Length: 239
Image 1 (cartoon, rainbow, N blue to C red):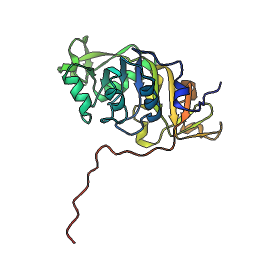
Image 2 (image 1 turned 135 degrees about the vertical axis):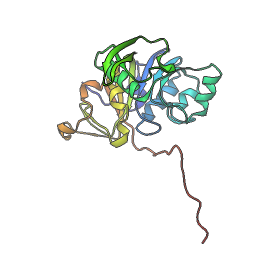
Image 3 (image 1 turned 45 degrees about the vertical axis):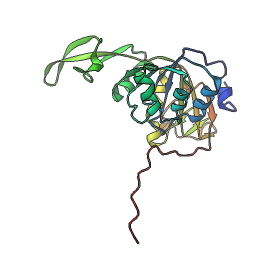
């Protein structure tokens, strides 16, 4: 089965439709599927529900899809760097489901593992728990309340990897692994963009982070510019 496609547009052909749910890997601007996001923007699909740790920053990463008004709902943990996200949320243009970071990762992992829901202490007694089922289980300090969180399943996941072989076995690099692995398993179809593709057998089997069975299509997206969300520098001292 051929998995490598010539570009992002070809890899996404026939997969996009209005109202679909996406899982997007990465954290901030690190490890995000930039080429696939650009192709989704160019395709013009709308009313998207996107599960992602955040929405990039203004006009970078998923922020591009917010700017073009293609996103109906975000399921996110951290959104503080994106002014357009804030504006759309406060004006009622964007539906937001806030989810604690670890819970979001576990919801996607659970969805990929066929687990429809799980109970967690995270969020008990806060707005996160509103409207959710609560059960009491024995904890380290006796009976404690836990809330039910639902696993996430999506129509499509878009992820970014470092290196893959031709069969789609994939390796992430350092912090770029954030959220990409669970997002890849949580959707019906996973499309990956990577920096390099090598022949089958070139990768150490013990170092594979995502087995190729999860990756249906992939592209080489390199070269990339490493963008910085916030550049913090000291003022130069007087000579």
